[in-house]
Length: 175
Image 1 (cartoon, helix red, strand yellow):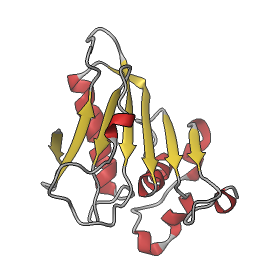
Image 2: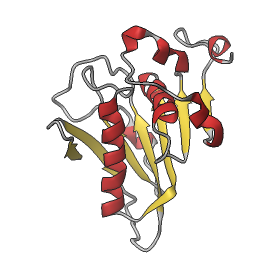
Image 3: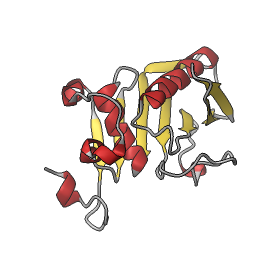
Image 4: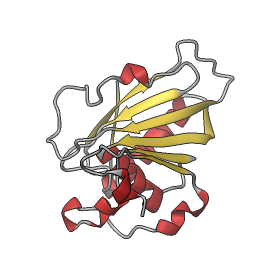
C-alpha cells in the first residue's frame, strides 16, 4: 500500500502488486485498474477494490488507485494523481513506458474514457468494462474541462459491454 499527496495536500492511496520474482533488469508492463462506485465517500479502510487477486500477474506491475465522491476519475485531480502514480512507479521499478495500460469497470470504465479523451499521453491502451463515454456529457457527472475525442485517433481502446447490463447495454454503447 503506497500513497502520494497532490499539490493541494490531498492524499491518494494505491495498492501496487509487483511480481514475486521481480527482475530489475527487465522492463515490466503496468496495468492500472480504476474501480467503480466513485460517488461514495472516502473510505477509511484501504481496500477499495475487491478481488484484486484475479488481476495480479507474474509478468506485470498491477496498480489499484482510489477515487471517491470529491475526487472522481473524471476530474483534474485524478489526471494529476494517475500521472503521478505512473511517475512514482517509474522511479521505483523498471517500467516499460510503451506498455502502461489504463483499465476500469463501471465508473472506472467511464474514467478510462475520460483519460483517453483528456490525458492520453501516459497510456498505451484503454480498456472499459461496462462503461459509457456519454456519461461524461451529463452535467451531473461533473467532468472537468473540455474533452477531445480525436485523442483516441492513435490510441487503442477496448470496450466491453453486455446485452444484460441494465445501465449500459451494448445496444446503447455501440452508436
